[in-house]
Length: 478
Image (tube, rainbow, N blue to C red; front, side, top):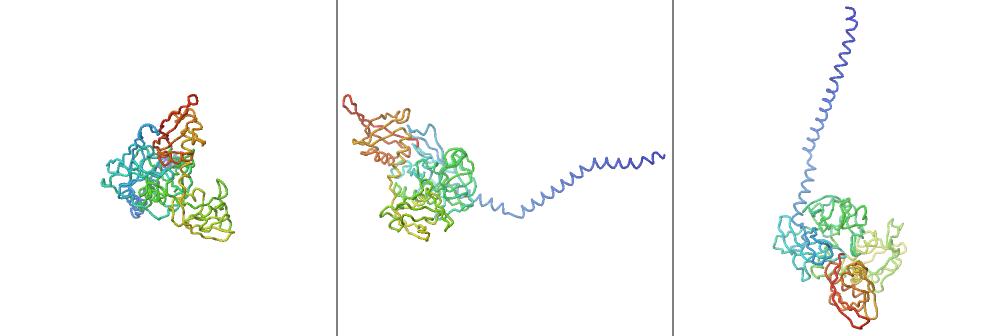
């Protein structure tokens, strides 16, 4: 009996420990579950009581409902002989006005023989002739193209944020057909302004892009970039990737995309519709510093361009700008790069006035410049020369006129029938007397838009002294 009494308390303690070890974790788990359930209930009540996220959802749905009917999906059938490649290309666009005009990128419709336009409600229309110029008008230097469909087909122009300058941090939405998923929508913010993604501009044109982090992928090109009120502020044009940080129209989203600002779009599109061509503003200055001409100015804690030369009796000269002046802002925008300066000016039309601020010997100066017209041949010749070199054709000036100086072996030019020594007589039906005329006429007749341009060339047989004339159609891929 004593032994039982002696071991009894120990047994009770041991039993208690066993019970605690077995029942304790379950109790702890029940307690933890109760606490988690309480937190869930409190969170649910908070979400039910506060409708801020629902209001954000409603706003985003409102943007979608207001913009989606104005977005189109494009299917492009290339012309026979096009170097674009077989099969259809796809892209996006948006309704610009009540006249049935649709805006997209020039690179989306380059070389097109037929363009099918699909609306969000399933209707399909064919692009029509635009002012006798064919199924589209385009400006390859800004990568903007204009299509037209029957306005009675039920087109709904999207609202535009005309005159509104987007700001870094603004929430934006992208519409388009990424990877063929038609009428998709993605969201992001304005990551930066005045970006110089020069590699995305295929013909050495103008940049000044809006940078966003919205998802943009192949098929989004030409689609609208809109603000929180559903108003267009830009158009998707390119993305940056790990391999092409300066911008490309190919590849998958890496969180950096670029859009053409609305101010540039409106200036170009309105001129294409009314005149069929684009006249650009011209300042008439050059700057020091080569490829990186920015100068840091401590007195303003900012940067600017040091003017190197001023065209005599040009727009800047008449406004009082002189060599040595430091330009810090133009049209209210800080000077952040040479391409941005060029793009801001050329987005305006000849005859418009533009405010230019700067310093002269560290003293503030303000100028009002009435812009002239940018020489169209300067752009055309540079771009067409590059396109023809990629085509495989090099030319030179001689006393007889422009001749084929070299044809790259295995190139498209060699396949088309070009040969060294041929005399180029006309391009696009217009006689040429020098190499510059070849470039200008080729660009004006649609070489940069993927259209076939006839070259009439003469080949002289030195042995017989006879000359053979033939026409070769030139069509480049870019």
